[in-house]
Length: 376
Image (cartoon, rainbow, N blue to C red; front, side):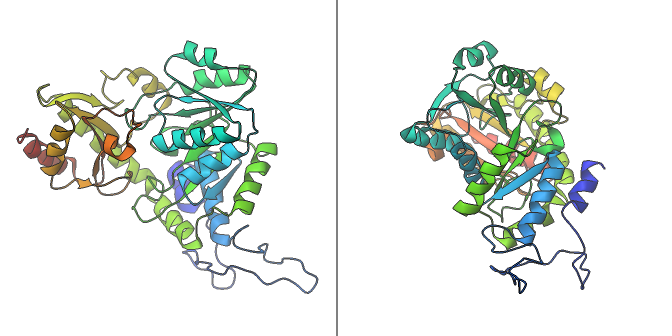
């Protein structure tokens, strides 16, 4: 089935008895056992499993075409669970521009012996040089947050395979509609901040890992999920399944709008917008690789306003349709100054703004940007 069909049907089964078309929300934390102690319904306690979470995990595995998925209370919780499955002394390679929350987790786990290297993922020779006998995981994020660097997933997969290491890919920005790391590109695990495009309405906090194959790693991470309890609530799982039904159409429209807006911004005088970072532009350094491994370029971009932080905030203050807020992937357009969010250790330029293009008509968003640019 095509992804649009799977987004509607995966994880949804008629309820026994009532035969609901829309799944019920199972808020119970515990479930009746049979007289002999067995579990006729298949569920014991909501930390370890829940009908809504099981349905969501089935749907997410289907969308990424993986064998199984695990849902978590946030994208960071999902990332942390995978990192916790490694052992002290193991070595991780990650991009030097990886999402700052991921970098924080990796740095934090150094205290119990997890080693790491941050490298330029676009420089394959640098990745190869970073490999050690202890390398167990290579983590890629493409396009990257917030500079939208594009990593050649298949090329990194070849390096990981040679090193007998796992390849994990943060596919949050691309989504399974635009990029399939597990299918043909060589990744072993995909991570999603489900909060973003998959749920798509800024009303869910959740994350997920999707595994190409089940086995020792999957079972270890599942134990961490169930024993640690960093799981989404039944209602959040239900809301995500609701949002998944429209996500292919949302992402397709957001990508089309972002392309038009990126082209508009790239035509602005350098005295106002000195750089536009969007892989759909032929001038983007990663355009060729993105065209090969993605079926579209996504709804995210970043721009660098001529000047510094004050000039960037001046542009933000003049906008009427873009919400000045963090996060991304929702129906409404967002804009954010990343350096001030990330703090003292940020790698984001002081004049950089990250834009998440929503479902407003691109003409209206362009008009909004155009009137705000007049203030610069």
